[in-house]
Length: 190
Image (cartoon, rainbow, N blue to C red; front, top):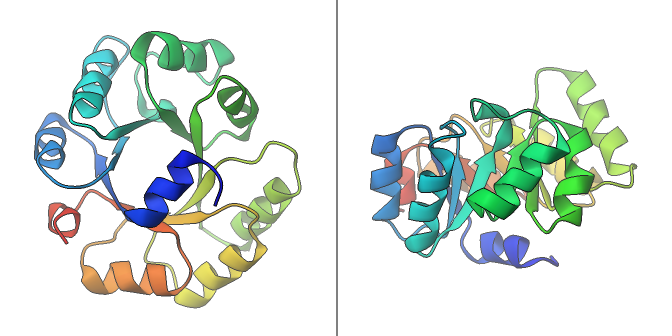
């Protein structure tokens, strides 16, 4: 797959997504290797990332969800140089090139609402600024849709959102997803 991040998720395809302090504490006690941080603000994100990294896990910050950060290069620089995040998750295409340039791993999220979302994925794949992986939500989308995206994508695909059990995980992975992300603690322990 290429980068250390993509190799890690290929080897350990369950990603813990945390949206609050309780979820963070729980995921730090699991064997998951990658944590998607979906909460916090400019004052707390440094501590959250430090705790994830101290637990020996990769800290991926969803920049769009961190209060006080903007969709600007300076926010990426802050996450890299001050917070020491390993990577970023975003829905904003314009952040990918700079994030990669400064050495952050990148996840570009897509919400599959209609056929226009599929076209957006195809268009992005033809651009020069490819993320390390793309994440499609909801992750329980029909297996044929996952297979179509995987086939057309030049980057690995993660499925996230609404994945609650082993069957959901297996459908995504069997359809070609490299990994899944979920807030479900039961899935983290699989």
